[in-house]
Amino acid sequence: MTAGTLDQKRSAAKTRFETLGYPTRKSESWKYVDLEPITKTFFKEPVRTAEPQIEACALAPYLFAEREEIRLVFLNGFYSKKWSSLQELPRGVVIKDLGTQSPGNEAGLLAKYLATEAGAETNAFAALNTLHFNDGAFCFVPDGVVLQKPVHFLFITTQDPDKEPMVYYPRVVMALGANAQAHAVMTHATLSGKPYFVDAVIEAYLAEGARLDFAWLQHGGSDSGYFLSSEKYKLQKDTALQIHHFTEGGLLTRSEIEVEFAGEGSTAELNGLSVLEGRSRSHDHLTVRHTKGHGTSRQFYKNILSGTSVAEFDSLVHVAPGAAKSDSRQLNRNLILSPGAVGHSRPRLEIHTDDVSCAHGATTGPMEESELFYLRSRGLSLGVAKELLVYGFAEEILATIQEASIRERLESFVRSKLTQILGQEREKC
Image 1 (tube, rainbow, N blue to C red):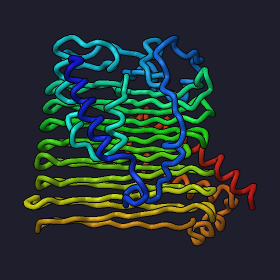
Image 2: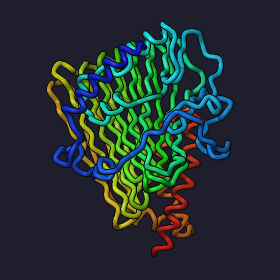
Image 3: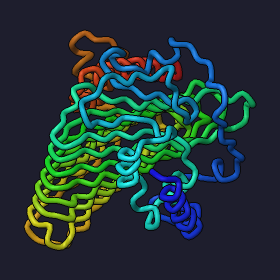
Image 4: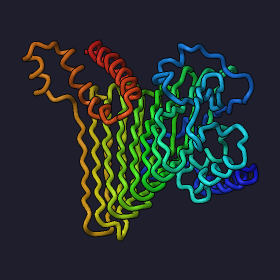
């Protein structure tokens, strides 16, 4: 991408952000989000100087089958060649960081897909990302190519040398050609206990017949981190998209996902799992637009809540005029482990045509006493019975992840986290 093209998109984003301004609680989709800790804190952008020094053991928990993945690692928002692993790629595949100058053909590809709607952005923080991002990842898979290995975008927040609150703006752009296939995962983790703010944007474009399986893993760590993300997926005819969201910890995590069915006969499956404790807050906002007919969308989100944590599931399915034979399901379930935890559910439908099948549902509550009684009557202790029920609640989401290395590592994370949370709950009793 030429500097002029990027400058034009940044200028459009700047104008758009000035028009939108920071969202307030008067907006329905932000009513449960307190942005004052972000807007009233001076966050410092890191400078691309010497690479932060970290040990291999610090990264190890976030890698998936180390020798079997294509990996781009970013430290405080900047690409790290040292920790990345770009193996030999099929002809025509482009996987690179955004901070390095691209040759002409790659620059043209990037310009085609990056920030295509900068001047019409509806998310103020996405506009802010376009205005400020310095680095990120670009993945292009040409027509008919199947990537056999998963692509991993790993973003690590480390300790700021000046110990000031830090902000950076990750950008991930993915484009799959006709009948192309890829597995990808984006992970964010923090190695710092200091305040930080990450404002991320993900853009994905699937040409006719393409298949994308994408996992987004947010390990918030301490209760001083803020992570906001905006994701947009555009699906052409007969495409298949699978999204898996996992959130662990963090003072505030808010993801905004928009899926557009721009062609007939496509499918989109959106699955999410949050495991929260303490003061953690997670907000999932989903919009699925059935612009064309014969499309199928499925949403299945679960939250496990302890302490005074809060989770929100706000989902809108919009079926446009003429999008007949659209099929959509929305389901959210919240498991409450502590009296102070709260789950908000707002699945909604906007249907503007006939001959569709759409449904939604939501449940919120503690573990079923009858299930606990059944397990204890079979000789299990109360602690073991609770662990089985809670992990079984989570496993239904984990089982939807097809890539074995990602699923196994995530299962390990969830088991460890749930053991910790249930242990803390027992100590309170």
